[in-house]
Length: 235
Image (cartoon, rainbow, N blue to C red; front, top):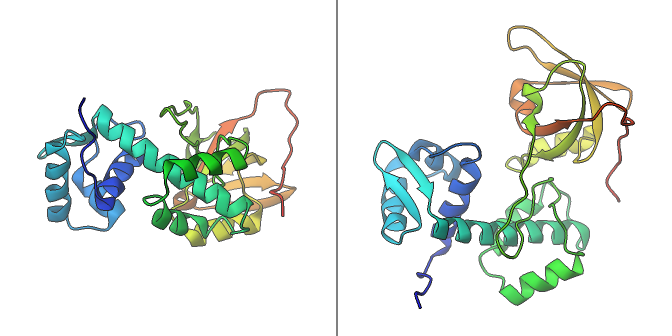
């Protein structure tokens, strides 16, 4: 029986980052990995070569990187830990959603499988974390998402927020102040020409989002006939 190779926390960070960056893409460039992890390109190349030798990624110079099935399994396990911890910190310990990401980054590598199972059970076997990201199942399944960024949505649509990027705590605090959370619905009033800002109506108030901010909010159109509503997170 083959054993899983010994994987460091840094390796897990790389595998998780590659998985998150590869949404909708066949391969991820080393420059994007370097930007995400705030590392030099030389350091990234060195780590990708190590991961390739462990059969966790397929890496070719100038062609980027992709996860192997073994690498995907590790990435999803780390993501499951991360997102369960985020939700536990939010729902049980009362952390605000802009603070859970950094804490989960530190804890995701060290919790045991038993602790993971106990968190999962205590939370009622949740499907999504506080930011709306799907929590991988125990056997590594992730539901398919049919979403687009707010920047890509069309004028006049009624939209439901599915998830928001958790990379920037300042952005999360700003969105919280506006009432922008997963499962909140709003209407897209207009998008100014020549890459102008996006105007939305939320709770009968108009808000304006830049392209940078609109690309961090992921939405799905509401089916015709659905009521427009804006549920708020529990205090």
